[in-house]
Image (cartoon, rainbow, N blue to C red):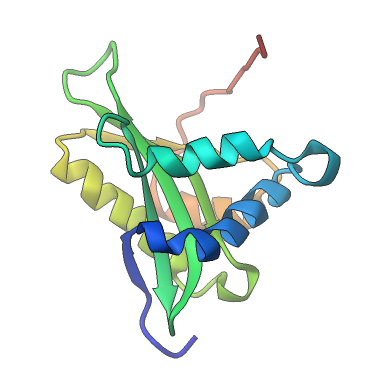
Length: 153
């Protein structure tokens, strides 16, 4: 990776290069093979990035003409703030680019977009086993102390 990393909004023409990043992200969290996301979820996720009525957005990081990472984020209301909040839902960097500032650049770009949208906070979560990511996150943000619970319906 000799060229500088450029973070930009995803474009419709990026689909073929975005898809392996999305698949890599999902595989990292155990969603591959028999547990892979259905194609309809991937298709809907992609379409939401280009729907002006959706609060979901996507950024990609590229260098030397290759996509190296992605960040998906969304804006939402909160019961404890007047301003909207920004949830950084997905963040992924290809393994060869890790430790080279790509993840940091994506997070900073999400923060810039959130600031421009009037958000007062950006937050995200990761799995407790993702020590490499947490080493970066601990430099960029504070741990909230909250534990996430979920219940499938």
